[in-house]
Image (cartoon, rainbow, N blue to C red; front, side, top):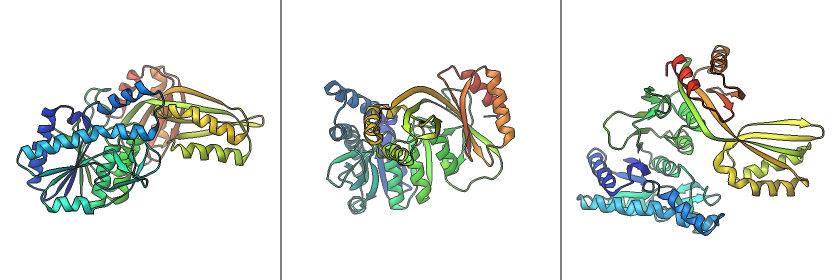
Length: 396
């Protein structure tokens, strides 16, 4: 059995949907059963969000999920029609019909479980089962969506449940050392382990969603990433870590903001309340730090711009919990990261990067290390020259 996933750019027109249907049928020759998870066509999700904002600048999230789920439902019906028209039995299932059970907040739900019985029934009848990614159903019976990248998560969760490989097809033919849009002629990575893939996704790689990779690692799902319409070999994700020091990729993420929460009382219970509130909003924060100013504490952290809309509500909740007016300051930032295997944060590599940053003439704000990466944060600036210097230095 195989689970395949096709992204929105691979399904943006009916002609492409027919091409994808032919590819699925070709794959069926070597796989007894195929389940296909799909995204909405092209920019459909973005258009639906814009439509909602014509009604309300802050739409109710439950109703927004009902609206956004339409995109994938359009795709599954058209792809199933194409498969049937090409002579192969196929059936479409929404997240609710496929029994993809979710928990958590609307627009940012997580998959709790998938009931296999319905999908198995249709597979046993000889169908290719086409499932709407990005969506599920909660304990109330409400439609929920999983957030950006949710279709990847749906596909890997299905593969984990059915104990089979997952093939993710998109508009790029694998994972590259650097985004090809930022640097000409980067190296394609033929095989990568989960830890490196997760680190790359955490630092801005958008080929596979990081939640999908985390699921893949947890359940040991072999993942293949390839181009929907080209025959070039892609990238395989899985296997053990490599011990030798090797720089594999350079990540650039300009979708980050630095958030500073000021004037928090210097008391453990107040700090605990602040982070509890951030957790309640499912904020994915990185590089948190605090500074003691007289009797107060300022907290700063990095997070994605997608969370900015939440901060008015977050600020209100924090004020109610710490019994004091606070300031929230948000500034754009660009993060450039080097990712590799082995002891990537050793002094030699750090020194080389500092020298290159200095030569580029760009002033950095801060840097941090992990076992697998070094990240530098800059104010919004032109970083192309720095990217070129780093890529050449580390043969990327």
